[in-house]
Length: 80
Picture 1 (cartoon, helix red, strand yellow):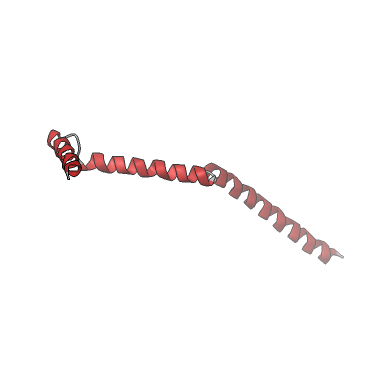
Picture 2 (picture 1 turned 135 degrees about the vertical axis):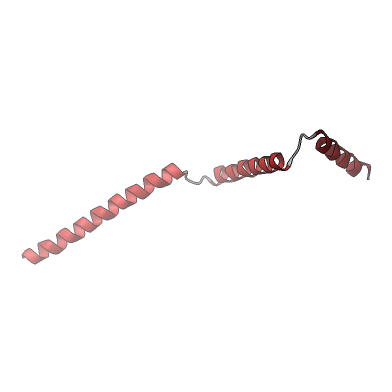
């Protein structure tokens, strides 16, 4: 019981001093959650946004090349 009383006293003291307000608390919680998210992403070894953009451009280029080759095959058959 004395430990919980101690915690409540500390919170009350901080609120009285005006060191904590809603915005400070929410900013702190958001920063903690962002750091945890980054830790999880790092552990999972996920690709970054830049890497995803580069890979999507490569895929788009390969799809264009495949379409061009398909068109060439169709036109070469028509010529024979």
